[in-house]
Amino acid sequence: MRIMLATIGSRGDVQPLVALATRLRDLGHEVRLCVPPDFQDWLAGLGFAATPIGPVMRKALATRPRPSYTAEQLAPMAKRQIEAQFGKLAAATEGCDLLLSLTPQLAAARSVAESLGIGYVFAVLSPNMLPSPYHAPPPVPLSTEPPAPPDADNWALWERDRKFMNDFLRTALNEHRAGVGLPALEDVRDHAFTDRPWVAADPTVGPWLEPTDLNVFQPGGWFLPDERPLAPGLERFLDSGDPPIYFGFGSSMLVEDDLGEVVVRTARTLGRRAIVSRGWAGLELPADDDEILAVDEINVQALFPRVAAVVHFGSAGTTLMGALGGAPQVLVPQMYDQHYWASRIEQLGAGFVCPPGNPTVDSLLSALDRALRPEVGATARAVAAAVRRDGAEVAAHRLTTAGAFAA
Image 1 (cartoon, rainbow, N blue to C red):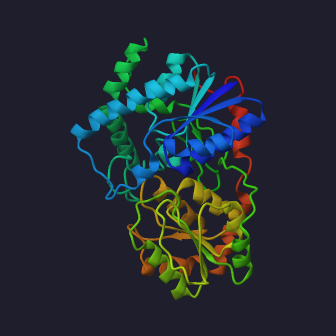
Image 2: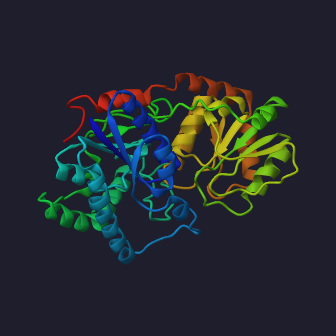
Image 3: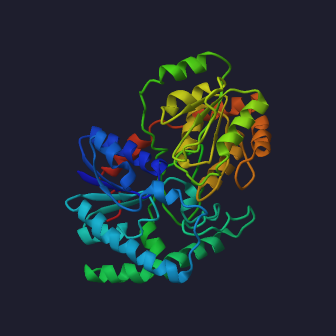
């Protein structure tokens, strides 16, 4: 089979697709990807054909403060988004047998598949991205609204989400559908999401809860096995003292200028060594502190089992890697599905959540003081033992089985 895998997002959104693509290639299938421009060189190095779509994520994620748009501004943005998907995504998918979209942001993906007469699968990385009475939807990507309170009427929030997609995407989407001979849509969200979506999340860490109106398939999380050794300097650091705390904020660039200082002061106050990932934000750290080691992109699968705790914003990918590594987690959620993952780790007893907003020394100290207790470490290790390792393999086999996808 020839399969197109598509998403718009950061490294944490793209890497699960690469995990699935690798499994599919191992099974003898031809795989293409359609992802943001930032990842073209990386994918080419892995031997995958990739077409750029969406914004340059480093630039988009560096915008501060987060933008809030009016209805008048959103309408032309939505039109450009739909045009790009019917153009770039359709052209890149030509000749494929199946299209899988791993984001709600590709609202035209199913229409593209229909126009090409091929199968379509809609998948998400987090259960709260699908309509459910048990989960409130994450704030829409182009808004600055806070997450829903715990006692929110989730169905009312999901109706708001449906209305948002219909108000700003339906007109442009139906214009393009008419241009390729497809009937108009009444409900953009339900069409794009299908009634048989996939949840590419681990069922222990992020379970899909029944009953709902959807026939959901949950194969487990999609992670890419990483066999790279840790750098000699990192190995020496790990071997030279007690397990350090890992601080990493990944692709996010929406951080305060003093976050590096906050992290260092937190570690020093605790009397703990620390490994700090510079990330896309390029955190500034002291150059003369033997107890603080700054790193760039590394093999976290090898690192996380050897650290005392993992502190991060709460992306689906880092949360899964932290759970897999058996490390207690401290989550500092900022946006989108990060609030869901933070709540799940706390519910499991495998970590704690910092208050909303930018992390401070006091908020990190409070959360880490609880996360570093022995009983939390024991729970985190028990969660690690329950995490599925075969999610991408299960998904690859299902994806290439006749009748497993909606046409």
